[in-house]
Every structure is written in C-alpha cells, then in structure tokens.
Image 1 (cartoon, rainbow, N blue to C red):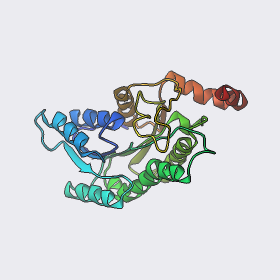
Image 2 (cartoon, rainbow, N blue to C red; image 1 turned 60 degrees about the vertical axis):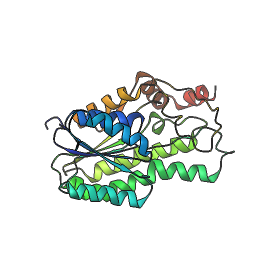
Image 3 (cartoon, rainbow, N blue to C red; image 1 turned 180 degrees about the vertical axis):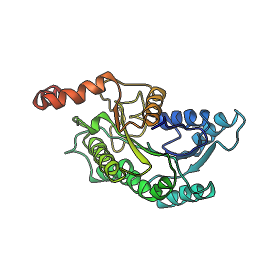
Length: 261
C-alpha cells in the first residue's frame, strides 16, 4: 500500500494548543492537510492559528475551543467534519494529563479524572468519528500512548493505567477494523521534554520525575507522522524507551527491583 499522504486530507488533532499536538498541527498543515485543532485554551489556539495562517491559507487550521471530555465538543467536531464533506482521514487522540505521587495517598477523583481525559474521552470520540473515518478510503486513527503503557513505574499509577488502557483499546480496534480502509497506529513516546508536567492532577507543585529517553515535542511529532505515513501498527520511540520495554519483557523481576531504586 502506498505511503499515507497528508496533502488534501482532513485531520482531527486533540490537545492541539501545546506540545506534541501543536507540533503535529503545524507539520500537517505545512503538508497541505486541513486540521480541526481541538484544545481548551483559546489564546493558544489563536496563536497557533496566526502562525499557520501567516503562510497564506486561512482555511488550513480549523480551531475548536472545547474540552475533549465534553460531548458538546464532540458535537462541534462532527458538525465541522460534515461541513467539510463528511469524510475524515486522520484522527489523532493526543490530549492527555498526568499525575505524580503514591496511589495509596491519592484521591479517587485523581484516578477518575486521568482515566476520563486519557482514555474514556478519546475512546468515545473515536466511536463518534468512526463512520466518517470509514467513509475515507485512506484513514488512520493515531493514538498517542506511552512507554508507560507497556511497562508501569511507581508514582504514576493512574497515568500508567490510562496508557495501558489505550494500548489495549488500540490493539482491539485494529483487529476489529482489519479489512476496512481504517488503520490504527499506536505511538508510545517516553516522557516528552517538559510536556508531562504541564498538566498535573492533584500532585505536589514541586513534583519531579526521572524519565528515560526524553524527546522534544517536535521530534515526537515528526516520528508520529512517519509512523502514520508508513501505516505502522505500533512504534516505541527513543532508545531509552525501547530498553525499558524490552528489558521488562526479558526479566520483569529485575525491572521491578531497578524501578524501586
């Protein structure tokens, strides 16, 4: 099958106001793809729109200010897709939040909020948009996971759980859609530089966390689009991330001991 080409296509990118989502939106529009950019921060969406539209095409970025957990936001996305012909070529489920701290000492609300944003919302949005994706003859669902959706670590239990859920969801959806025109790509970065700490739920403001193989957001975005272009089923980014995952597969007890240290 030919390389997936973004030119002339329509994409939805959630969490588009910063980090990976912002970089993806810029790269996609630069390649001639129209992007429905979804984010909560109007000012950041406005600045992104100004950056992209300064190149002369006022119709490349289609911003929607809204919370991905809100069904009204999903309604807006659907309405915009229908106004653009009713066919969607790329869905990037990127929006996410994190938390740092002991599970035992955390609140129930922290778990529920992280699962809502990182798993339930993208799963439901995917369900809503599947008819539009199936109407394209060349569609991709790209889920932004994490190496922590392959190997969990201490003090990020809720985040790890949400990413394991996204991993399983991606695998199941890929099997269900086999034989259709829709492909599913799971991208698993290590901690993106500074991004994880942008939105921490019920966490110490001074919380810090060691990470393995951090990449800048734009490097993750470039690798994500490369994976989509090649219709890869799954990619684990960074050497450190791959080492963490593969070492765990070889000897889980050793990894448990190392992570406790």
